Amino acid sequence: MKRIDLTLDTPEANLALDEALLETADEAGESGEVLRLWESPCPLVVLGRASRLAVEVNEAACRARGIPLLRRCSGGASVVVGPGCLMYSAVLSLRLRPQLQQISAAHCFVLKTLGDALRRVVPEVQCQGTSDLTLDDRKFSGNSLRVRRTHLLYHGTILYEFPLSLVSECLRTPPRQPCYRQGRRHDEFLVNLPASRSALQEALIAGWAAFEPWTDWPSQRTLDLVDSRYSQAEWNFRF
Image 1 (cartoon, rainbow, N blue to C red):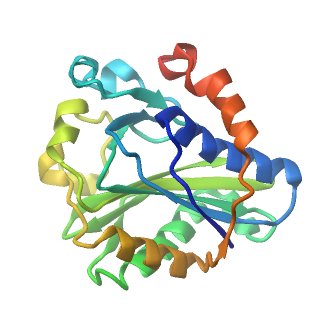
Image 2 (image 1 turned 90 degrees about the horizontal axis):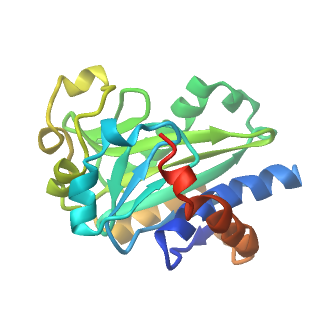
């Protein structure tokens, strides 16, 4: 698997790059796979593809803090990211892994890979809910996916030194909750994984065997997606 360690200059470009990696792989129709690691240099609220802004996000609080509100291409609920939250994106081949065409199988495969990798750093890591990773019954990683014809994008968050109080400020109580949450508030439910960014990156690289650095990333497609989608209110505030 190829690896790209790349954080771009704007939040819009960082979200666009994930989709550009998926589109490029899907159009090529080859069996190549890539792992991207990045971290937003500023706080950012990322809505799911079908998230409803008024239901999931405290928009007034975000605007008062100058926190951007953007929408990603994958499903799931809204999240708050920024410094102290490592982001990963895996573009996986459905030709190499045809079983991943089933959504439940994709969740199981990726969460097992992530969990096995992170347990090298923190042995108590567990998988819970549909797509969460937890420590002591508290969530530190949420994940979502987008499936195309020949590839899928599976991406998510890993909290390690994140100001968790910011989540309570920016997000409302989610309309859908996993059973294990048991109605807990954000500050009761979330936790930082006690590990350094470098240790987490090394674990993910080893877990995915993503040892081949890749520099030929789809820069023009990323810019095109920023212009046509991620910088547009029609996309970010569609719901």
